[in-house]
Image 1 (cartoon, rainbow, N blue to C red):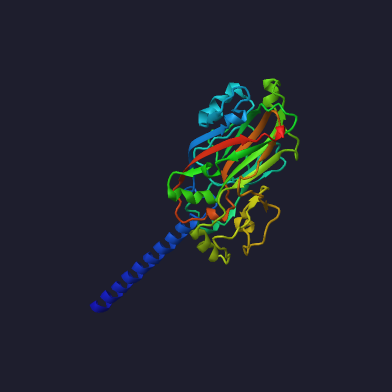
Image 2 (tube, rainbow, N blue to C red):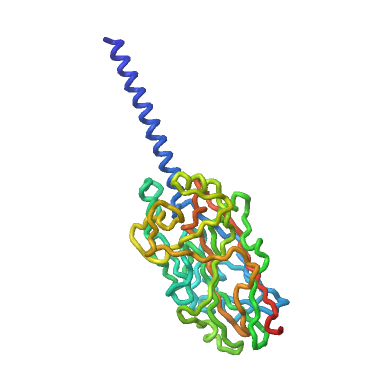
Length: 344
């Protein structure tokens, strides 16, 4: 009898051991899977160097307020937000300590500002598998300055002293230096990062400061571009997508369908190309991007022009998928240059 009791006790201990092991493995799988979430709290990007420069030989000058002009501006929380309280009281700039994923297709019906959608429900690492299949997109409010945002958005002014009745062409040079990762590991985030810019309008150089700062454009008249730095794919993303029956290769271009509308409990896979989840055209739309900066980005009239710049992590880019995402650090630098098309 004692031998039987001992056998049963050992059996129960074995069962308990394997049950605990099984639950541990399942929990591990859920936690690993949770890092694939669109709004993973650990997938963030810090911009630790930020500079905007114009070519002096092109006879350009740049400003954050439309009054104080320089050839180069180092962007920081102070220069972008705090220092402009009195110099540019109408600014709606956004600073981000650590960028986290958002989504946009750019200009819609939001004046000269992108319609950017954030997840209105914070990501919970303990939320389990089901909670990571859905997002709750909410239009970001850009009606006032924000110190701690998920993305960057700010106005700049460029003064073109051409004096020609014809427009010049504005270029962004040194494309490879636009995003510079701190380490090789940080290069991963380049596959999902986006840089966007809006040309708002131009006024005469003799215009008042109020007229310069209030440059606006009618809905539909603003010009924009969205730049995608890297269209190759992360190996981890490719393997994970295979498990969802989505087959891509490293050199294939996979279209991004960004969010353009609010909604409740939206299946994020309905915005992923070739997914087995039905495409939701009420929420997602094609994000039209350029993949190189060889051509001019805008025509640049003589006078003072206003632009709005955006920098964000695109949540609907498939290369946001990664099992290990401790955070990334980048230097961001824009070099503007013009040609003298107005003289030809």
